[in-house]
Length: 284
Image (cartoon, rainbow, N blue to C red; front, side, top):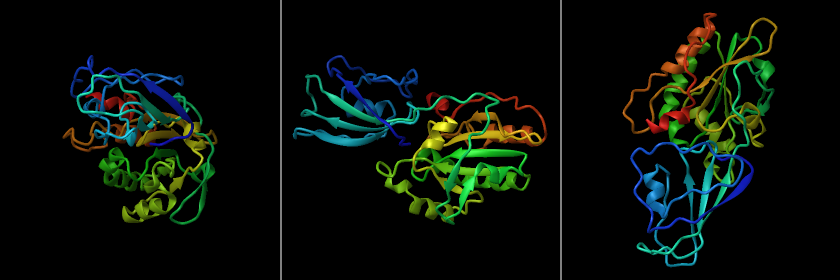
């Protein structure tokens, strides 16, 4: 998921001291807004840590590749190897990482749903938060076209949405990815995706990423469930995962976590489920 402002990270790993990472590796601590070092000696270690990395040895003075990090929320990385990368080099390698990140704070339960006014590429209509005022609850999903975690759940997200829309739930999906780094997530492609999967909800384009920051969205997919009591504004009651299923972990897609939260809200009960953001499950 590619969000706004760029930061620079300098990494000075040593191939001599590097050791294989466990599989699956434990998640590192959250990334702060300050520069940090990511210790790895070469592309193999990035891959071993679960990064979607396509770097190869190069005799040229530089090479680069886009890397999607599964552990650091809201970060899409572009690695620039600024020195030769022989396969058995014992020299330190300088890796400069340009990271686009979301400067977002984790939302607290009870937080009011931030206002938005975003276009729907499929229809050209502009949607606002107030368009959902007639619903007792609102599910706001941050998704995109290309993310393998979204692709893994996409059909089930559609089925779940259709089921609960019939029960009165308001649903909206938002894509905040930068088309500069992910052109496959642009408005035209969003419209194609919405049409192909028959989205029963509006799929909106957050070009500036302002809405993602306002909601505290850090990854895709990310789910925010708000309830509405009378004339009170929508208030956050659930921020967590769809279920425990991930690409490749062989766990069935059930939507259990989100379904439980939805059932509680629509029946007037408190949401008594652990709020586990989607990234928390990667270390399982």
